[in-house]
Length: 334
Ligand SMILES: Nc1nc2c(ncn2[C@@H]2O[C@H](COP(=O)(O)OP(=O)(O)OP(=O)(O)O)[C@@H](O)[C@H]2O)c(=O)[nH]1
Ligand SMILES: [Mg+2]
Image 1: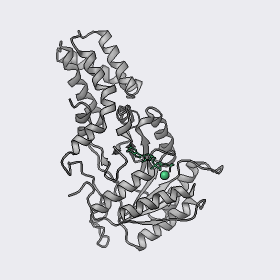
Image 2: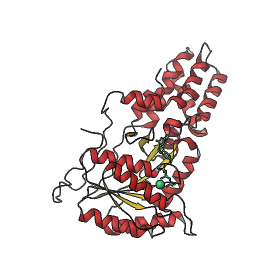
Image 3: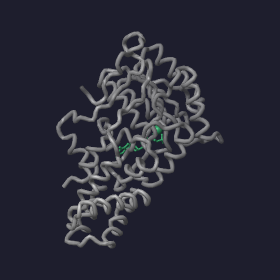
Image 4: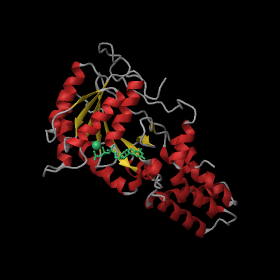
């Protein structure tokens, strides 16, 4: 079974049993080197974070200075000030409880608490009572929305789903063209209007097409900025309303794409979009180029919105479900 399993019951008529069908996203490795790739993509974060901790803990006594420096490293790794304090406090407590006197053991204790903080693996999609399951992708410009949509469509298709993409980022022609290139590469249909068209109208047409063509999954791209005076959040709300009017419960997933290289600002973006359109999950992109992978911890702790997908490269295969277990193992890997 692939990473994205088929949406159960989507090819049958809707029965009570089908209601609430989900497309769980499995986190088990699907090919050799899976973990190695993840580990490699976290190299920069590991250098700025774990390697500093290694140096810090080398033949040191456990004292206040040590805790302070540990906190400093965590803050620098974009874990966030409050979360860094919280983590250090947890480590301090564990050290006391277990009567640890070797600083070298702090690394494993920290790892344990980060792992706890990140929680359990999540499944990707919220329940959609009947196909199509609608995924609306939002985020500020340049974070990787369109690329993530291409990769996501590819994964769903590979698992036997019929996928349709809606080009509701009508801000510029190039945005539509870029999505078209992805749809051709993946081999899925694209619903588009002209540049400057009403994004909500594109969303509406996409949904009608998804129903008519019996698509399992509809993924909708949206703009990250606007050239008109229209407020981006108002536009997204409108798309949201249109989708919800046509299918109760749609969009089933509002996926916020965040760029891992932006660090703490990503948290602000998540707040903004969360208030406007109710984000259900986060795709954290460009982890491969970021030294700020600690943002994963901040997002979980401050916002409690699950990171569901991570982007670890520009290639079609470089998107994967986020697994806290794998992430922490890869981050702390020797
Ligand atoms: N290294 C790396 N690059 C990525 C990743 N995801 C996206 N990118 C790159 O980021 C750049 C912007 O990606 P887009 O998908 O165009 O971003 P967008 O959010 O759709 O941008 P706008 O439509 O302008 O708002 C592209 O060059 C992508 O190849 C990733 O996980 N890793
Ligand atoms: Mg785009």
